[in-house]
Length: 200
Image (cartoon, rainbow, N blue to C red; front, side):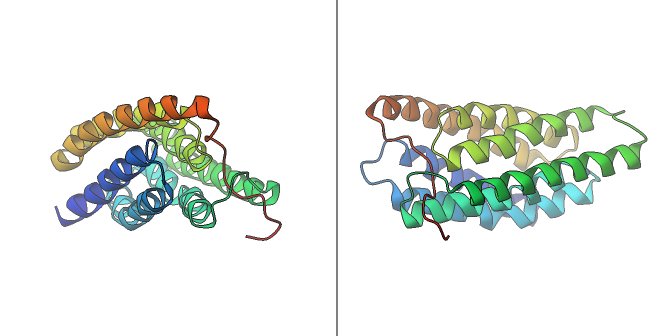
């Protein structure tokens, strides 16, 4: 229960801060708070998921750390474009974690044989690609977050983690708000991405 409250609070606050940042005139502090809240809640999620042998989702959560750090640094440094080297490293790390998590899960369960694995695959693409796009201030990241929340909420419900199932449902409302605010912001041309400096 402690881990559920810890992880749930961290991720819920993260979505609230990032959703608010979409419409804020000065969004830097709110974006930094959002990425920090994600990083704070991340360890609890990894422990909970690994404890139930949700290897794909656990690897995905851990693999999202570089993108979370990218989002935090981008907000802190006020970067408006992604340095190609940093972008490549983040994408490579993300892909390696996806492949590793899926491979280990397939090894343990002798294939993709359970509903939980299918839901974990939805979490995988929603979380990692959503986090990556939001780090670059792309509105589409919110839609991928909605996919991730639906799959994760279903997984938590099936595994009797009621607190986290409810948290995912509440988070869907914040994601919807963030997406709407991001669409309103986009035409003004402020939706660029992170780091153009040669060194991080």
